[in-house]
Length: 95
Image (cartoon, rainbow, N blue to C red):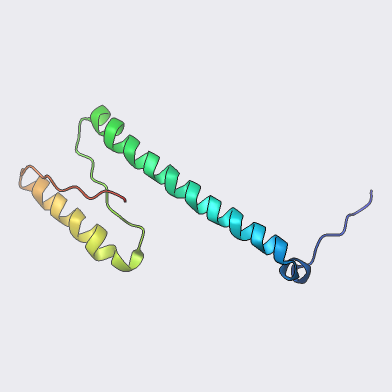
């Protein structure tokens, strides 16, 4: 069985055309991922919350540097409101 020779890392990096194709593929992958995340969020808000008959809160966890302000503090406020039997109208949804 013959073994085909693969391209070395140096050969790939030297080929600007392949680098351009790689960049284009990565951009398309990122775009598709964002689109899929939006579809998931919409499905959760529209379908899941009605199926489980409970409030569903979305928080933006995309930037870990903003974790406290975007995730931890809103989650704590939601929990406090639920523990005090307050109707919580907080809505934190992924953009």
